[in-house]
Image 1 (tube, rainbow, N blue to C red):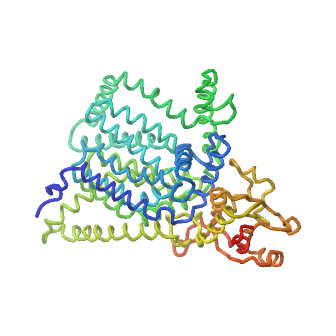
Image 2: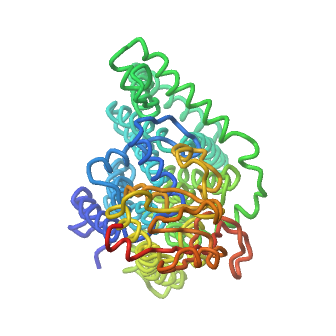
Image 3: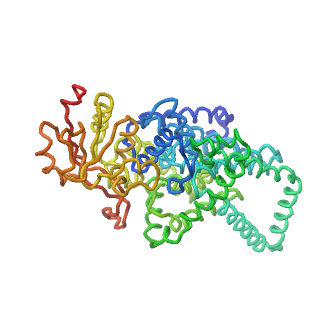
Length: 568
């Protein structure tokens, strides 16, 4: 029987990966707008729309880097605001991610290169967060491309890969603040690989310093050879960083576009985009209270996410690390371990999307392990390895079923809260689509205010919510503000029954405890209640016995259908 790498149709990684990209694009775009916006998608999406309306933008570290904000705003300007369009830029990046496997062809067999593309296309975590408007997947893509370009530059001695690495890492820095953790992990992994080489040399009776010495000599040789190119890298990265981080303003004397027209404004804009943004990042994300939480529960949650949504990737990576050691595999193993240990400490909430940064580190070992197991299957005999090989074969089949089944469950349906550790607690668990349709109808047909928030979710001045931090009550509405803004609905508030207008808008939203109070004042309105996860909060999930970010409350929606039907 042929081994996997002997099959003719797997000898052309470019053609095979093109097919993988088509599959990746299909599974990411299918039903992309079905799931109601997550709490986080709702707040960022709302602020993207408000930025587009006002023309004012500045870096706000609480909503992370500007890449997704700017790119999504540009796509919405062309295609309109919807859940599908909001998620489209990240989905396209996730679909193209498998092509990055080609950067590792000098270290991988053709079949391993293709397997790497498959892992990047179909891992459930990468798939789910490719269908989610958030910055972690773009960060993982750009950081992985940076790593691949550096590997290709070292192996081929072609400077063009250094330029690719510079641009890719600059883009990574525009996505999310934890981009700086990638080079930290990489440096730590290099040290540990060096330590491993020294230990292996000593075990075989050689001088343990020799591998370290030769590695340093090779590195210094590359630095001398690439001297001029390395000096250009900061100059290549700076325009990317300034373009994305520079403030935008309709004021003709401020902002990026004004600076391009008047070069005298450029130094201030560059300063704001670089030093100013770095200061804002440090003030928020390096503050001690952002990480003032017990470590063990966060580590347990992180492990649970990997166990439930990346089990196959983890197991096949372990196969490669244990039985198919290579310097690249060892490097990725240490990189992944540093992420597993580090992210529970630096995280401010129990966020399953952070596990994406472990999956990309494990992707290369997982691809090697996957091919190794598949190649082992035809040679199974009655020897001591039979049980292990058959077990891994069963895992291969079951993991494929898990990838398909779990991805379909968590990605293409509105997930019930408490059952889906990947979706995170800010994902609405109720069926909000009928309410969203009512909001769209109100915005299209009604004159005057379209939506009124009543009681505890009332806000004194709606314009104060245009940029973070918004009024505290406003966050309890999420993700509804994204839908009211996307549909162009006019929003107002009433804190109590005395401030409720005599002729209320056709849609009134309140906490369900206010149902009886409002029912008497809104005759003729139909009533709908939904348990909506509008704001994450801690609860305990079943047998796992650890806290997880779930929460929310039941909201009541009063809708004047007669007014919607008549446009009044």
